[in-house]
Image (cartoon, rainbow, N blue to C red; front, side):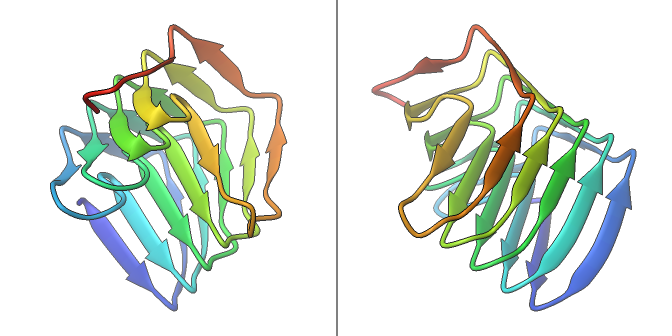
Length: 130
């Protein structure tokens, strides 16, 4: 994918991730593990992964994704965002034409206590071939 954060803290503001891919992994645009990342006013366009989170995959992390756009992103779990054992916040994000087998826009597993606040979904869908 575009960026992999391992046990780190960062702020990303106004970033563009376009055509990023994690073919056999997770987080086409960004994958975080054990991190505290804030993603603000960023765009993920045509990003994909073979596993979780076409745009962003948050694993065992406490991330904030704020006022960002996910457009035409795809994955097996969470076309736009996947939260795996994470306490993340997704606030004011738009998901447009995202697709996955589970959760066209967002996938959250049972071990996540993520807060999803005021999202917008447009033409997101499940896809057997994501």
